[in-house]
Image (cartoon, rainbow, N blue to C red; front, top):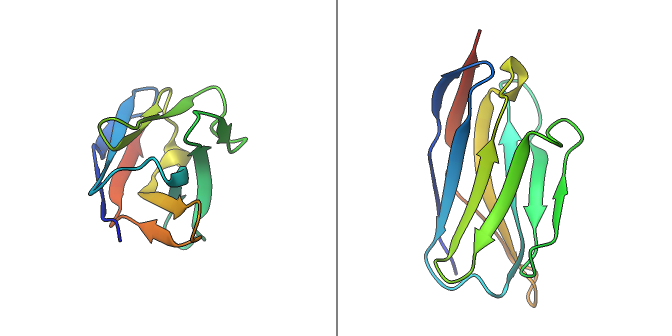
Length: 117
């Protein structure tokens, strides 16, 4: 089992930046990929970005060039740097992890990001 705790959400204006953090309760070396998802009101949860143990990343088209996902295996942390935020980035952001051997998946409780004009 692993607990994931997100932090760093908040209210910002369009064009500003936020950095989300996800703290895991244990070593994340076997968790791959780790990911950020988001869910806006009335919409389905969508994948934002993923990062493997080796640092390979993938992004949703809507955030490419603006968001950067990274992980620090030594600190058991995953981050999402969000720049040039848009109104449509408003959502609850969730940290997700998949155990690369068992396939078990884990979710954090989410952190709210609100972008205003």
